[in-house]
Structures are given as C-alpha cells and as structure tokens.
Length: 242
Image 1 (cartoon, rainbow, N blue to C red):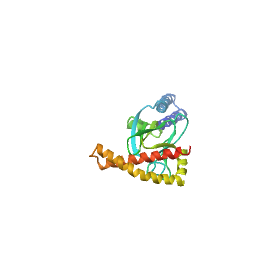
Image 2 (image 1 turned 90 degrees about the vertical axis):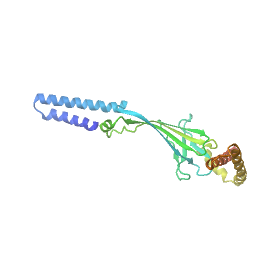
Image 3 (image 1 turned 180 degrees about the vertical axis):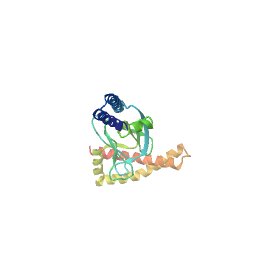
Image 4 (image 1 turned 45 degrees about the vertical axis):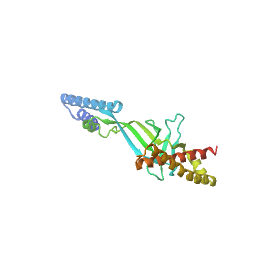
C-alpha cells in the first residue's frame, strides 16, 4: 500500500502543478502531495533500513533424517567448505532411500553443526529467526515490499547418534569402492556373524540392569549396538587403505 501511496502522491503533485491554474489551491495541493510523498518515502525507507513496523520471530522445527549413503552404514556425510568448519555443508536424506540427497544451506545467514547424542536415530533441528510485521496494519501498509519473512539467521543442528561416523563425501566414495572388494565383503560377512552375538550380549546386559525395559527400549539398545559395530567396521576399512 505504501508504494501505491508514494506513486499516487507523486502523480497528484505533478498534476496539481501542471493543471491547476489558481495559485493558492495549486500551492496547497502540491504542498500536501509533496509532504505525503516525502512521508511515504521516509516510512518505506525506514522499513527497508531499520525494519520499522516489524519484529523478530524465532521458530524451531525438528524432523527425522537418514544417512545420505543410502545404506545401513551409520554415516554422517558432509562437504568441507573453508577451513573454520562453520560453512561446512551437511548432506542427509529425509527418506530412508532417495535418489537426490538433501543438504544444509550455504549462505551468510546459516550455521550448521553436528551434535552427538545418545538417541538411536538422527534428527535435524532447525532454528530460524525472521522478520515479521507487528500487526495486520503494517502488513497491509508494506504489502508487496518483500520484507515479510526476511531471514535474520538460521542454525541447523544435525543430532546424530554417537555410533555414527562423520565422513566427507570424498571419504564416503572411497569407502564405497573399498566395500566392493572381495576381502571387504568377507570381512563384512564375518562382522555380521559377530555382530549378532554382540547385539544379543548388549541386550542381555541392558536387561540385567533394567529387567522392565519396554520393547521400544530393547529395540533402541539393539539398534545402537548394531550401529556401533558398523561404525567400527567403517573406521577399520578406511584405516586399512592409509
């Protein structure tokens, strides 16, 4: 609306100067239109420069994610950007298997990081702060300005289980090639057999501490034990190629 007012005032001021012949009415109308034009321009400028009529709103969303490796291996993939680590791009899936992986944003407003947790499954927690209008009056006044929802800052926290292994995309590609070798396949087969015993032992130990565990808790212990073994296998496979 402020844009319409500004242009309307400019047109009205021009028309009053050009088409009103009587001096006094011309002076009054052109002055009023000029003040309206200057005022609307000032109000619009304040909105762009100081976010006049707006306030910051922070929202937090949480969603389940999966490893972008499209495998059962517990891998947390990322692409290094710069040397500080603040601009690294983390790659993940929002479904168990998908052709094109998702990734965190890479811009001056976004910071992404990994947080290791005791949870059995990974999650992405996104906290965003955006500019929103104070009320419907300012929303209508600054309609079409494009300022509503302007991003102030965003923090992506990828909460991975401690059993996951953090790898660059380059390391993940190397791991994929290693896993295709006959020796690696034999090692994986042996690890699976040993893993069944290790998972069973982990569940028994957990039940000994808490005999009243629910089925969901037992499943979580089993999943964490399996991920731990897979993570160790990944580290050993990568170490063997150094």
